[in-house]
Length: 106
Image (cartoon, helix red, strand yellow):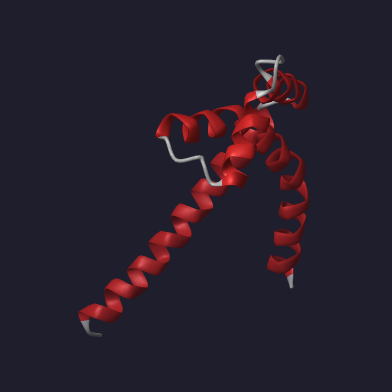
């Protein structure tokens, strides 16, 4: 067996092991976060400041206009939308797990 094939096979096995550990870690972490806490964090961070306009709405407008270029604005968009994205992942995760289990069994 030449060394390139060996390293390729080793890389594939290592990637599969890392993927397995990562998926187990993510599902256990997402199980510990409650829907209620994600909901409140999404409301508070997603809509803060409430007046005159929420940051997430302002940053989305900037993104659509092509004006979101400063690193602080990009960080602000990620910071204010992160709880909402986590909520979406937590809602979709059980459906993705069921689909993966179905593919593994067949």
